[in-house]
Length: 127
Image: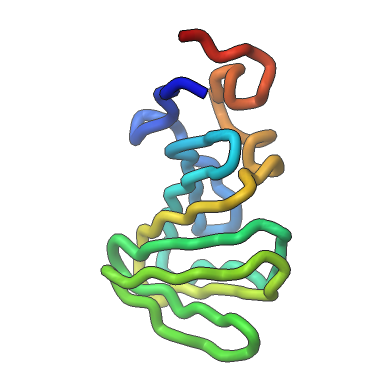
């Protein structure tokens, strides 16, 4: 697949949870990059999905629970979650992080505002 320009800061974010906003930065055949912005007090409830997830905290700090153990993940630190493993997060301070999912999250594709049609698979890539 040729290079495709995807989203940027000019793309509107989606409020995914109360105080948690996601923006798709890149969406390919086998992976997806998501930028998250969390307000203080936001929390992501315990959940699991089949996607492998890796991430990096850009600013602030995340309190991350995986397999029953809570860990502080400060700015400059990365993390990895195998598919199918329950995890949650909470934020005592503002936080910006980036997640990479493989395979891409179809549920996120379905709710991207203004997504070009190639992101939802309705337009063939050119080039």
